Length: 424
Ligand code: GDP
Ligand code: IMO
Ligand code: MG
Image 1 (cartoon, rainbow, N blue to C red):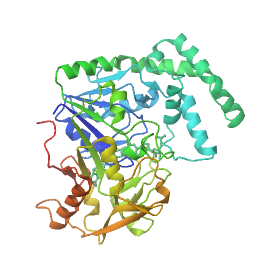
Image 2 (image 1 turned 30 degrees about the vertical axis):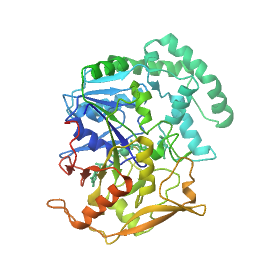
Image 3 (image 1 turned 90 degrees about the vertical axis):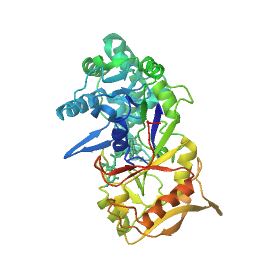
């Protein structure tokens, strides 16, 4: 297998970083293609914890080239901070090993300001990460965006920022009543930042095309999860990119049909950060137990993650909408030893019973239908207990694709590969 996409199958934070890191051992190139530094992908190596937001999780392996494709929204200031952290932990980052598309859309100060003002003063709070993601994608789609390559030409950058500011100025002055930097100040800031990013900027489309011709093994590292997709997700409580598999084709610049395996990373239960409907959310001490035992705090914002039982209708939807071919089931250790174990197998919705979600379904109006499973109490050192086997095979039967990986701890060693990725 030459190409594999990692897709979050829920509301993000399923353990994509850990799985990307481990599969990175077997591949040549790791590509981020959507989202930005709203992502927080955690990798634990011994007593070191590394959280990557913008740099692909392949960076930890010397043999891997990391690529940031043009579908990513790029905050150069956040990049510099992350680069310094990564280098401090002993990783050598060279322009050979990290290649960033000059066509990435830049997250400007105005984008971050607008994100913050809307969240603080707007009528609908999404619970964003506050990183300016939505406004940066808005600029891109409205054709007013600043591209990373623009940072290398001061006069062009200033001209673009001036035209970009015309409408925003009216919002900052009249609607939000907040201070904002002049186009000249922002141009200076971005131009300076551009100098440190410049060595890494290249034509990633041609680079990836060449990799494909050389039969290199490529892993596409998705950020967020299917339920946060701008089109497939629980709109408007979503992020602003295509987090489902479609994002790979446009965001990395890969022709359709070029992905052989789509691996859905799936937490053995469900979590969500930010606002929005969550059918299986637990508001009792069971939810609190999972939150505490699972260490469920956002890797980017530190917010407590909301917790609930595994939601199979949503998972079936993720399988269909991203053409998942197998899943990695993570954090099974968190459920081990619990007195009760439930999975949601369907919804009651508008007088009907559904077993699979679909775009536009109002998740705030569904009533989950649960099945009681036999709790398991495995230590994951020896044979799987019959109860754990049943939990896994029940999920496989319901969603119709195999569980290819199980994970039962944050460490690199706490994982079992049931399927052989990249070797066949
Ligand atoms: P991502 O955004 O999908 O990469 O996931 P995050 O890094 O935001 O959150 C997943 C968290 O769970 C991280 O703290 C990981 O170290 C941790 N983790 C990953 N897999 C497992 C697992 O199987 N068990 C436990 N207990 N923790 C895990
Ligand atoms: P990873 O890649 C979980 C959520 C935010 C908010 C919504 C919109 O680590 O799984 P945004 O800042 O993107 O405009 O926020 O999306 N969100 C995530 N939740 N994991 C993530 O990334 C997320 N990235 C964004 O909490 O609800
Ligand atoms: Mg995360």
